[in-house]
Length: 346
Length: 101
Image (cartoon, rainbow over all chains, first blue to last red; front, side):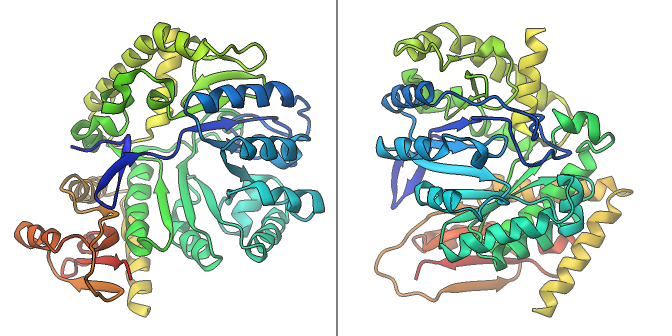
């Protein structure tokens, strides 16, 4: 039986190494992308307090989290980024980051790269499409200058692509482009109609036809690149979820039985307000874990006792809905789960 | 590799036609999903002390008996992925396995 808590390594089952805290330290960004789920833009000012963030990271590390993923907004615009990454690494975290790659020219930002283990660069397709989605002519070229810096510094990097109705025919080009530029990872994430996408990209929903097209192409690319470049698609087939619910349902996994928070929630999110939520940005606040500005050491345990049963019901309900909905074969699990969290709360 | 490029062009074209042929899309996705369900995508299986080439590319049809024997080799694969090339060209079904050197 599959056990997604673990991976197989030299015949031994060992714990999955990644227990991730995704941090959105600011929604300030040098761009205002059409598909941005967090409405990030140059107009945003709010930034997380670094001392509160460090304090929370220390507590979380002691509770089993070992990987941070800094997102945003554009993380290089977070004024305390260097201090954050130095600190997190010093206490044992692996540091990863998602960036548009356009701000890597500066000395400060190249110095920061020293503390980054893996950086993922957003790429929306060939130059014209990328610039259109990014809302800035020349954005593609600037991003590629950043990629050149990553290549010269021998920094491990990947690309993240948001699949849209316009971009799917370019997926093969995109994978070839990523591989030819030395990427180790290509993550393909379907557009979610949240944030600015819901306002500025009407009619761009990932319908079942597009989901099938993306699923088939991504499967081909996984086969093509095998272990030379990881191709990750954030879509699953309904029947696969039905056969192996533990792929998505953390509560079906053996390691969830000890009720240790990091074994149940392998990803938690810190929003730019300091709010801590499970799984994904936009998760309903009913399931809020706390806030970094007043978080106490015992709050993880309290959450396990008080809210995990409710979260377990949410997972069960979501899987039941997916399995019963025969109209939709291909599923963006995180999106469905987030939507269900909001629906149930209302 | 011109043959690969030809295949890719044909694949995207065929999928584009899926706008009006949803049955094809559903069947192709189901075929891939079934390969996965049946364990034809295997990551990180190792073998010790066996010299081996860097890569196998095998053309043909995978049948369950073959696959059972294949796995009994002891598992030499860093990563194993399967794609049913036959969804575009019914005669071809290639899988590719990269072996730990």
